[in-house]
Image (cartoon, rainbow, N blue to C red; front, side, top):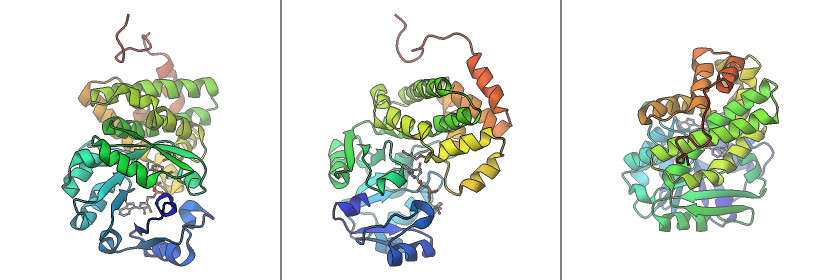
Length: 322
Ligand SMILES: NC(=O)C1=CN([C@@H]2O[C@H](COP(=O)(O)OP(=O)(O)OC[C@H]3O[C@@H](n4cnc5c(N)ncnc54)[C@H](O)[C@@H]3O)[C@@H](O)[C@H]2O)C=CC1
Ligand SMILES: O=C(CO)COP(=O)(O)O
């Protein structure tokens, strides 16, 4: 809708014929966007060639689990002149690769020109043209600025950042913290607990990001603090909702089935758990969430263990202790 508002003829690719027909005939996508009416210059197709051929810009919004498969399908129709952007938050399971790496491999394109779009942006609000701010990041600033030009509207304000690694790491890991925020709310803890989780979660994101080559300042921006606030405090967040359902004693399988939409934080917890070992980074919230999700640990016990850790300096492993 953002691109359509800027006058582009937008072609959405979906594998789901029913959804494609609904978008083309009724200009709605009720399962995901309720009553929102979609612009008439936005058309859907199940044909990847038709969706991409002749495009100036291709925006990938696959789930992290399906990014490689979708990119491989798109690859034959991608040309060098197309601007490639993605808005996916997560790592590839198994390889632990960032989404730009997956895209660069499948599209055989210059990785420095791949643009990451992230920030606090629940789709349900974007489609209603409620004020939203995001960041587009690419090593090649010209590519980031092209994305900014294409996406900026009166209700969708777009900032640029050269730190694609930082923006990707922040967008992925904040989902773990959002699951944790849902858990603390579901357990009946107060605002102090949630603020603690958000802030110490930011430390965790910063430590991993720095180890992976990110600029720590990126994490105080829209992709870091901004997205942490929206996903840890909004009932629109699937990750927050999943966490609060887990706290009520539902199994992970039940929660995911009831959600019916992707909860990226689950796979990301597993990936970040491995990344923390690969990079030798301490990630206590991620570690406790891993135990809750995959080892059956009681959420309340996880909270007790987090509170009972050894004494620390607040900026340990981030800034030198003076
Ligand atoms: N929904 C939101 O507000 C935002 C979502 N994101 C990110 O965008 C990505 C996608 O999220 P959503 O669209 O919200 O998820 P969703 O669960 O609402 O929709 C995902 C869609 O992908 C389809 N899909 C799954 N596997 C596929 C495959 N192998 N081939 C083709 N289609 C496949 C599903 O059928 C579904 O229609 C995630 O990484 C998410 O973190 C980022 C910012 C905001
Ligand atoms: O990333 C998002 C908003 O910026 C979407 O978050 P959820 O996946 O938790 O709904």
